Amino acid sequence: MKKKLFTLFLLSFLISSLSGCQSSKDSNTSSVAQESESLSKQEPSKEEKTTASSESDLTQASVDDKLSISESIYFPYENLNELTINEKTDKDSLKNIISKLPEIAEYIQLSDVELSNDSSTITIKYDEFYEGAIASRLYDIDLTPPGIDENPLYSSPYIFPRLDNNALLLIIANDSISYVNYEISVPEEFFDSKPLTLELARENFTKHLGDISDAREDKSLYDILLDHDNAIFANRIHLNGVVLGSEEEVLIKRYKEPNEKNGNNYIYLSEDSTITFRLEKGKTEDNLLTVTKISVRPLKKIIYEQFFPLSIGLLPEQNGDLSKSRVVGYLGEPRIKTSDTYYYRLTSGLSDYLYFTYDDNENVIEYGMVREELASKNH
Image 1 (cartoon, helix red, strand yellow):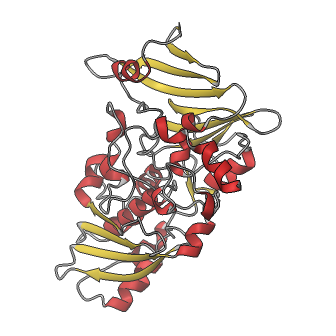
Image 2 (cartoon, one colour):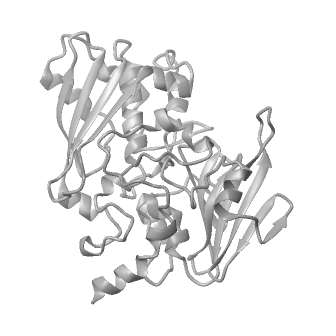
Image 3 (cartoon, rainbow, N blue to C red):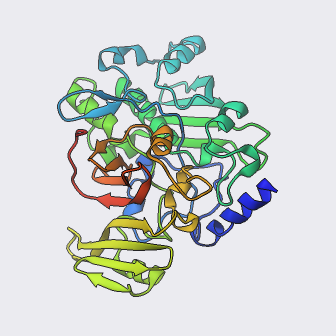
């Protein structure tokens, strides 16, 4: 009975929250570095793209006056030489080197490493462990909400940024490495999930991050590069196909004309919530209006079909409440705090954030995404 009630309670999520999104069972998946531009386009990518680690291990560690990089992804600059690899590095040494990289997730463990004859391509293989994967989720194994893959490998927020950062570390430390390939096996208990494969190329990092050749000699540049993907993987996060950077015509296509317009704000009213899209002129020559803020303010309780953080595995309680402790327990400490709002940076841009605003009882009363410059330190 409990399972039936919960399933019925969540069933409406299938209708709109995942409209236009495919299942996350594709074996080939794009990285943050490869896909960071896709979110500025009209529609989210139709490939499933994800991230991981639902553990609250994102303790902030000050690196310098400008950056605050998560300890979970920061490899000490002074130890970079420990990642040196060449054609003479044997398999045991390779595994030892890769084991020094920051952890991807507790339930993903290194199984093998292969290096091509010319040392240009390194392939890193991991195994996903079922019990650990299940323990990382916010929902019971028998009550998987509709629209979420039961395998958290495809719905958690941090795996892909961590895979990117580890690949970047290897590329910075080794001029010979042009490609870092990943293969992650999945437990047979997740019978619908396929192994995850990923190829990350030096040229993609250069395309999206600029020149990285000096990072080995320049700690400031090294820290800046690592901080770029020190964020929540954004490629699955959207509200009915609208993302930060969507043009006005996409919004109107998805939502029709707003109930109200207040300056740059397009306001949509329903019996469940108030949804507001802020549109501003972009910096491109065409000067089109694009979405720079999406906010949802539930009138009573959080409605699943409007709760887009569901796509990264964050769920409200069954009564529709979402507490600060539940958010922080899943996503970790935010990049920025104000008196009532927590901001988590997204991989879609250095000024893109997922945010949650809390009431006096520390329950979420508004959530959304915003693209704007914010203070770089907690306050």
